[in-house]
Amino acid sequence: MKKMILTTLVLIICLGAWASYVITYPDTVQKAGAQTASTPTPTPVEDKTKPISPKMKANVFSQGSDAVNEIALTFDDGPSPTYTAQILDILQRYQIKATFFCIGQQVQEFPALVQQEFQDGEIVGNHTWSHPDLTTLSVQDINSQMQMTSNQIKNATGITPVLFRPPYGAIDDKVKEQSDGLNMTPVLWSIDTTDWQMPGVDAIVNNVVSNVGNGSIILMHDGGGDRSQTIAALPRIITALQQRGFRIVTIPELMADAGE
Image (cartoon, rainbow, N blue to C red; front, top):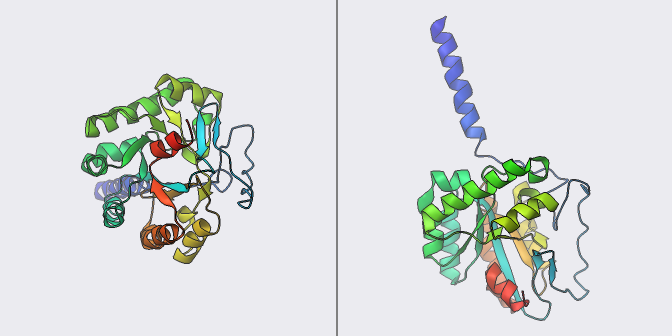
């Protein structure tokens, strides 16, 4: 009887550990643009036939300049021991740079991958410690989520991050105040590839090429679940963007060229 109880407890602990590596994305929040506690309805997709202006409302950056033919690739929820290195290899192959918004727990677990991102010239940003909806937390817990992650990134790279992406794009005044206090600019996105839904490689590619415009910030993922479709789609996305004349840059470059 004691052996059966012990076996059951071990199984429960193992299942809990496995589940901690998978991040779920509620349909109501994982969309382009900021979401707040008071406005849970997703922001409609922009009409890309209209000129796009830089968006830097209250220091929340979600779009570059419509006057510059460049875009930024961003990756959330890593580092992942399975997928991050593959993405870095692809970026190296095409000689481009991207911005990675990292989960603190994952940085603590896999610091060498974050070190590699930094050494490769990628930008490393803060994506909280455990990927909660920050708008539902206390100010103390919001600060802890951000500060612990920044500390881990600094331990891995020697650099304190200055960019922050709130999980699900959920941000309100108290979240913004805490990011300001840590000298981090919140960064959202203008195109969601929906790779987190695993819609198929063609759909991921089409979500980008059908909606991209000057200054677009493209949301992808290198962790939080099965990202095999992201790996397969990425070379096709890069090739399509380059064939259309877009320069692929980091978020700091996009911000600088937008005059921010």
